[in-house]
Image (cartoon, rainbow, N blue to C red):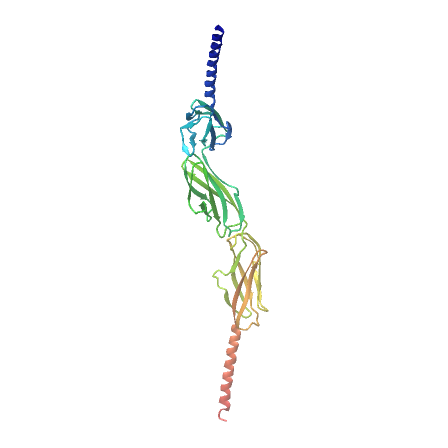
Length: 380
């Protein structure tokens, strides 16, 4: 009988620790799980954790969800099934997942940040390593800051405006270009003088740069700027103008006609104008003249003529003594290896005054002779 009592007592004592162990297992069988417990990110990054709340117990769990240990500047959001949630219920031997979204501030110190995600008594320690020092700034960048073309080209640069601040910014777009240059901004390919960019976002900006018509060949710096409140960014662009070769040959008044007497000398003032954007060197002057005429130039050659400049040349023209009265054409030409210019002159030739008087004298003599004959032989 005593043996039976002892056996019963042993069984009862054994049941007590068995029940305690089961209770302890019940508590530890509810836990949080995420595979990414330690990650490295840059300032301004959005982190999206998927976390499982696993209930291996035999009782339902309705746990409060919370995030602790992070500075208040870190924005956080807990969602499940498309809803913002503060509590999550899980049936026995099931699991439910929820998403924790964290926005790392732009203005943040480099280092490790430890925090805890909790669901009731369950805790999940996580670590975020900020790999670099954060900034509160704007960036204005382009992959191609240098372009080359002639003076008639339009240079189009593709730039990106990045708002690396925590607020939406309205940027004024400005340019500092040499006089006569035209700069047009096209945020999202629409012409405008400002661009609105969301926080931690970027926007494409097309920049059209047009040089003046008579710009000289060379390198030109174009500085553009985006300014908004306490933040701004500069972008330096470079345009290489290869230049164009153009030249005009005319007279100071643009009149391409004159008169000359056969055998006489006429001095014509000519103007050579560099209407291109490149330097012209060794400009040779020549003419296409009527037969037996003589044409020379003073000076015979122009050593150098810069873009937009003019030079004066005198053409010395001597008409042939045998030239008959009427209109003649003489062609003047200014030529370089790159370009040439021509001008055609209409020249009216007159007879010399001496021949005019000789003609008058012949007429007078003829009239006098007729008169003499009438006087002498008229009665007969």
